[in-house]
Amino acid sequence: MAEEKTRYSDEELLEFKAIIEDMLAKAKEEYNTLREVARSGGANDIDDTSPSFKTVEDDGMTMRSKEEASQLAQRQYKFIQNLEAALVRIENKSYGICRVTGKLIPKERLRLVPHATLTVEAKEMLAKQGKK
Image (cartoon, rainbow, N blue to C red; front, side, top):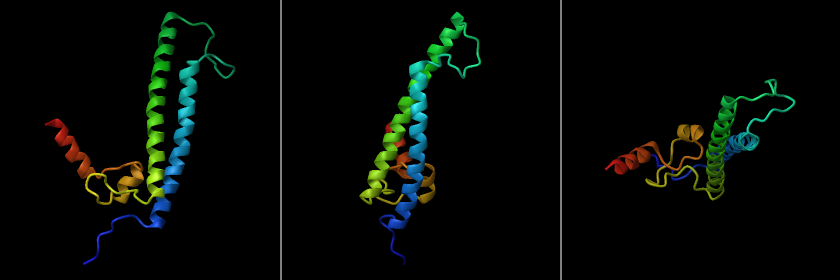
């Protein structure tokens, strides 16, 4: 009977590190763009081809766009923090271990959600407990 793995190998951790670093770079780029949109509110600039006059409805859309961009930026910032925390777990070799069950999170899940700290089963179990 094969012994169950308790952690991912250094080679596997390097693979996950590359995935996370790539996602992190893209996430930071998107975060900076969202922050800029939230700050400027999509103000007309040289690249903007829309008319320079504004109606009351346009101003309402601009405010909503700024708020949405700000909310998306906050969500993106949290995602960046989660990815950075995953890199720390890779460094201390605890990456990919479910914080509830202690079992390895399947590679397929980690490739899709590289900052995951729970197996799907543990997540579902916690969700059921929360509904009681």
